[in-house]
Length: 367
Image 1 (cartoon, helix red, strand yellow):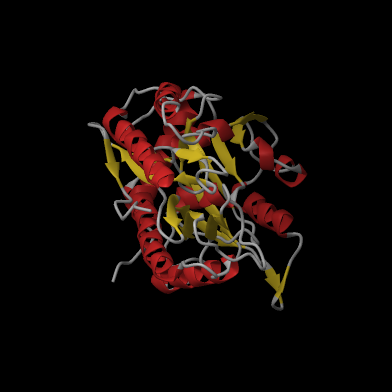
Image 2 (image 1 turned 120 degrees about the horizontal axis):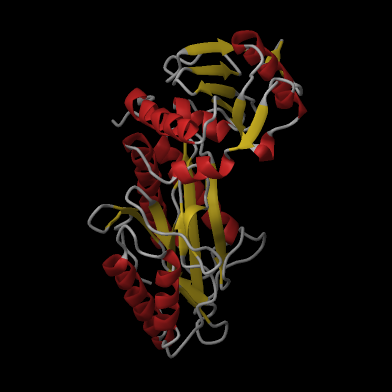
């Protein structure tokens, strides 16, 4: 049985990369108040209903403030807790209590401090006597390089997705409801993990580009069922789409699926460190524009990790470049409500290596 205890070595590597960034930017430390970044640095997952915080000094000393009893393993030099609950009732002033505890441990933060502007509220401001710099964009850039513990959690989430699709192929037939499919697939993922999901994924609608399951909607013969499943395991997301023909594919649906397979093959042959994500998008757009059926009119993919959409962005609105350590999705699609009823999208997850890409989601893609 796999174990996913906190990997101290991987956490310390991430801390070292942030310390190098702080030193390069002439910052004296980083005040971290977002749970996802606390987890990224310390390895400890805190649900979004709780507050936590970290101060990482430019010399590499990390202080973690935990919302409940001290975790058994955490990549922290100093670890303190605050009472997120009082007599079993969750507090609404957790952010204040968390940062007051941090202030007692580290004192006022002078000098130049890196913070996350999107979550840097008055409570955090009262802790800082020096100047602040927004390091959130730098954090997102650092998060692109996945360490081995992150890859393990993402792969575990992807493995759960494979079992969800096996179940989907068993149960999808004319007359089954979208709610029933959703419930069956969630059950498979929870059973696989042996614990609650921390994310569920996007799309569970038949004869539709996507969306949540609809009450009362049942599948009909001839429809295509796009399932875009993204179960998250301890905060780390998978994201894999497959399209199933409810009663066997038509000729148009088969042709469209063949063009999407060409697009995925182009991704696998083309991506290398240094490859422009925008160029790749344009290449796939030009390829799918030649399909005799369907239209491709959305992004080609995106990074995944602690958030469903991260960098790199395979999207003409960004100009990212692939780098070793990126974990990303490629999800070409073709849509035509009449001829395809309503469309096909196939999505794989990849990790970029120094030589190219490795497909993390090798399970069946057929209609």
